[in-house]
Amino acid sequence: MFGFSRKNADGSIDMLDVITSELRRLSASKLAFYRAVSLIEHAVARSEIILQKRGQGMVRDADYYRLNIRPNANEDATYFWGQVTRRLLVEGECLIVPLGDGLYIGDSWSESDAVTRERRYSNITLMTAGQMLTIQKSFRESDVMHIRYDNAKIRACLAALMAGYDETIDAVNAMLAMTNRPKFILSVRGMGSMGNVGLADAATGKMLTRDAYAKKLLEILQEDKSSILTLSEGIDLRQMEIKSSMSPAELQSLVDTVDRTTARAFDIPWEVYSGSMTEKSDGSDEFITYAVAPVAQAITEALNSSFVGYDDYLAGERATVWLGSFAHRDLMDSASALDKLRGVGFSLDELREAVGYVPLDTEFSQQRALTLNYSTEEKNGNEN
Image 1 (tube, rainbow, N blue to C red):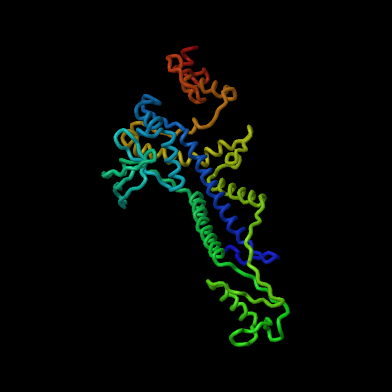
Image 2 (spheres, rainbow, N blue to C red; image 1 turned 90 degrees about the vertical axis):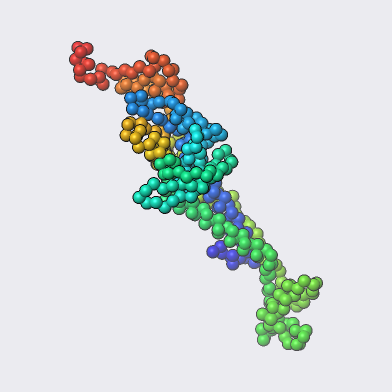
């Protein structure tokens, strides 16, 4: 698999090249994988979870505080939702358990195999701020948020990374085996007419062939006691050298290939992944649409099915991971668009929040207005 038999012109073998290459590729793959995870994780964690109630619009109540500020007594929302996202990308699922007034991430659990009825979860070990707690209580499917996220390309990328670990371990083991059992090169020049090496066996007096002589040398090399090697003219015995010659350019090419492959697996535009975005680049929008939005949608659906619940959802209540708060918006560049939004009924407070400003929370800032073009015909008639 690793081409251990490859030799240089001087008889040395570049087996360390193989080990070094595998270790560097593995290190680059791991770094690339978790860089991609980190980009998506931070995007989701920085997004706001909006709660809407029928007749009230957006609300900021105790539930909002729990989802956006402090999910539990020991973790803030940014860390909590970042961990949720990381588990979804790496493990393909995440269990969120409500306990008291807090939300906690399940590190391990047992799950029933019900098909037509709600599944039950038991033997749950919670993870919070680096500490674990096992709770002796079972929960129904509707009582917890079991978020599942299955992305075939990410799964294949992770599988390749794990396979890299196995290959590298095999290479290291082979390297250790060769290090512990030195290899020698035996050169014989000018052999006799009968294929012998010009030396006789001390015990039998017969001339030694090359193979017999090599076997004799091996026996001597394997002895624990000190021995004398007999070499005649034309016989050269030297230990095989193991060395590395990977160039910086080859290493950079390896890292670049791994990075680009990983970025494609996560649907992250290269300019976003590499940090080479320009003012005219639309990579940020593509990143949110193709890499972040699917994860945010999985969390949104779990929030509505479990946190909001069936009855409240039908009554008009909604929970949404709003990715608009993640994207950076320049105030001056957005001025024209904000003016148009103001004319179709957005309040000043809503517009201020959209560009990252604190709402004024005054009667004036919460008023809504419509330009004449967007007002109703009845209102236009009254004004005329």
